Structures are given as C-alpha cells and as structure tokens.
Length: 114
Image (cartoon, rainbow, N blue to C red; front, side, top):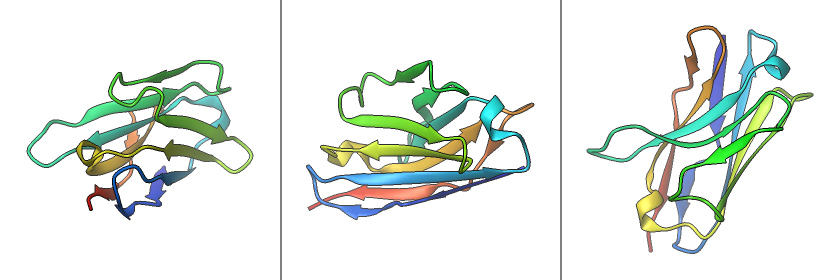
C-alpha cells in the first residue's frame, strides 16, 4: 500500500492550494480517505474525511467553508482544495487511507505567510 501527497507549497494569506493524494496497492474505490495536518509543536488533527462513494463528507470546524475534499475513484486520487488560507493553516498535510489498519503518506508541507 502506498499513499503519496503532493501540491504543498508557500502561499500568501487569502490564497489557495490544491493538494492531491494518489493511492495504490488496494481497491481505492472501496475505502474512505482522510486528510490530517500537523503544525509545529501541535498534535496531528483531522482536517476532512470522505467516504468511498463520496456520500459522506466531514470537516473540522476550523476549515469548514474554506476547504473542500473530493475524490476521483478512476484515478485513485483524493484532493483537498484549500481556499482563503490563513497563517494558522500552516502545517504538514497527510493523506490517510482507511484500509485495514490504516496507511499514511509522508506528507506535504503547506506554509501560509506573507
């Protein structure tokens, strides 16, 4: 099982980024996926989750209305569209596959700074 994130970078406050996560080694369309983040000195927190067929989606209160999670089962990819970014969104963002005991990616760094 492999989960690989991409799309992070440096962005100014108010800007946007789109993170991608490509999964392999399991039947992607059968499992839910999540995005987590971990800021320096803080615990890892759940940002958003999406069910296998995208029928159930949930967000952390801190990102509701700004972030959108989606998936393309044909491409085994889950996305996180992040708009109206704030400095407090700065973190390493991780993709997590709800397959067996769970599989983590290595993360992609997002820095929101002027």
